[in-house]
Picture (cartoon, rainbow, N blue to C red):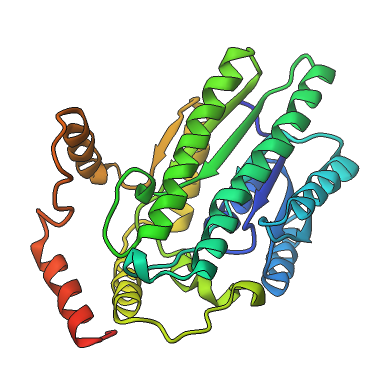
Length: 304
């Protein structure tokens, strides 16, 4: 997708973090916007600010776990603008702790947002975009699914999140190949950011009542939260930087998009272990102090 001006971008999780920066970057490139988010107040603030900058934007409350609400976002895009060209299946949440300590609600919430949200986005918007392409011989489209470096690695005390983000990588690769098979004028990318200060480390603030935590967090969950908070807030790469990287990747037809390509050494190690049938390498081999700190926090129940 080379041309962005006057095209339509749909963004889930569009009120904050990466989604909000995708919206600002899309506006800077002349796009019309459709934003969905579970945070209605944050969504209103983001839309108000965008409109003050001259953006054309509509927004809906959207829990991406619910296919009907994702469909409503698609309907709003078509009713308002008559087409969709760029889709960011971006909404995401996180939950940590030893994998056997995660509750059924943890799994339902994280997989509901991170996996089913992308599933709904792909199944609804791909068909809609193909129909737009049939009506417009000059049509260009692109779908970006937000995964994570955790979709290519398996760090400890992040099991539920790892599972969800690996699923997004597999779904995105399948989408890429299926679109190519039918010669669709639609590209696909998977975004795998590393630690970026987006607010995802505090995503529990928006955890719906039907999947609320009912038990006190375990020592491993507290330790995972503390480690994630520290890693996210120490990042030198900001969400705006990632947005620029992503739009460059879209224009260049790039499938795998990374915020921290220097982190790919761990991915290479994992792939090498798989090919050579080795047991998984210690993810903290190069940073044993991190592993030791994590173990210490888990033993002591220390959170900071």
